[in-house]
Length: 613
View 1: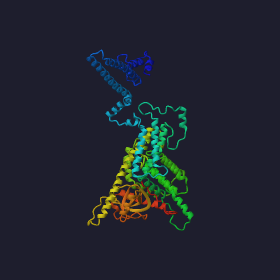
View 2: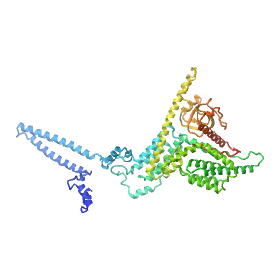
View 3: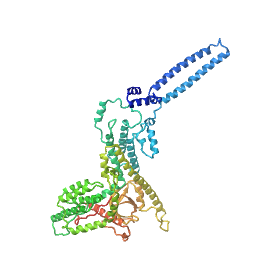
View 4: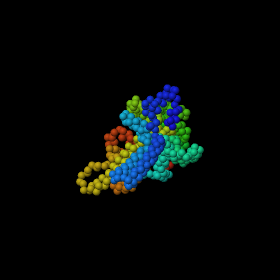
């Protein structure tokens, strides 16, 4: 092939003539042909060995004949003939060993890193402090699948960590089948991986193009790879569902899912009622209720006039609150239109959502300030007072707003999300992803957030086990103590275990916090569950929050009546804690209201700010 290429060069041209001189060595340079790896060297070596063996056999036969003919030779000549035979045999042995070494050298696998310049690239990156993971992209031995192996390994490592903390509970798909699916994806890509260094595998050379086309058209199960050499699109589509499943699993065991559900339940059960007069009819009550609902959601949307577009999070909260209020009315079109406006809301780009919401307000008659002008003024002032600190923070941070594109902001939206993106944005980005590099970035961003959380949960679980041992030991020796000693572990200690949240609402007292609305949680680990029961302690989770606390059942738990807990020293706590306490109390009250069947709550529309989760 090299000779054919040389002969095809037209030396009449300047460039091809220069190329011919450089690679052929006609001007005293080095001929490139000697660096090529082919089978001619091995064939020449075998031919040379064959000629060498024939020469040794001829010499050895002559020496044996001379050694055997001792009748006409003296003793000295006979000794010389024997030495000659031994010398030839020794040369034959050395030549055989040298041939085997040369043959073994020919059998050695070529150093494709050196041949492709990969070693030079790695040395260059080391000298410039670069960290590109070329080892993950290209492997000479073919034992890994490059970027696909990186993605699959990340997913499997996080799942294994989750399994150590909270065992698999899905009944629709066994864990072994879930893992095998990812392994099959990795192995199927391995067969057609073009990023491996070295010669292409001959495993699929016998497959004809028509047969390969028929295989690609065959239907495959959801999430599986049926063809032998899947495309990047098929690989990505197969990996999307496991990644979303894993994020949902971690979202659940961290307690974030419970906190979000509590906030949603509270918003869905915002109290709406009618007049206190007992003389009006049911029809009049319904009309009055519908009128107040209509006025309430319009008032919320009208507030958008005074809110700048850059306050995207505040605009989103108002839309959600207005949708929640409008659901209580009989006009199903209003929540649908407002929900359409909410769907256009994006982090850092709330202008379209604001404009659509105001258009919905005009569509349904607008909002006249003269009707309830004083209430509107009072509510505006209250809103300004309650959010003075938030407005100040946003005003300071607006100068340093992110200049990243929307696709980059979506990377960090997994789990609890942030001000720029939430879980919905992240899952949409995963489902719409079509590039391997972007998908790997989504996986890496998720791993960057998941691993620290899992490490913290593992540490908190170990802390809970140590606390249980401490409490058990302390209980046995408490009677012999005359003075009360400060406990090493208390209700404020950060702990974690996999739990199941019950519907039992209580007030819990945690150190450094006032009495707080909470829900009883039950540990899924039977050993931890039995140990806490024997100690008279119980797990609680504050309403609207994800963290767990261990409190004493007798002294630090009391029934929740729906009212704000009374505390003489409530003013001693920071304003932020007091504000969160009121929001949590209102949230617990709404959840309980929704759990009571056939409840009719009459009264004014309660417009409480949604608790952030």
